[in-house]
Image (cartoon, rainbow, N blue to C red):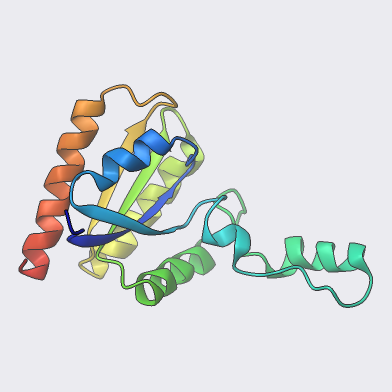
Length: 154
């Protein structure tokens, strides 16, 4: 099946291929990730010029895009989200967080308010490391993809 919508995944975990298979079985394709393992980890390369230790320090403290856990960086993170939406022609965002993860609960709150003002689609999931409730996730993602298709008039 040809994917109907382009998704950006963001969340506190991204290490279960079965979870991404579940997302993509509903007529979507995840084209970008805004998590620790995705584009945020490789957008900026460590400089090969000068002292290697200084280059690594510069990368981690000055150049690498801000992480959710970094206080006072919410505006930078939301601007980065907007840039990813534009760069990857994103149709919708799926954000997942692990049960009881307060850091990502707050991040989802910020994203929800930011994206609602822009009338942009966001699906928030609360998951466990083992994708229990697979049927519920499948149903929610399917409904989300359909709502994005309706917005795109597909």
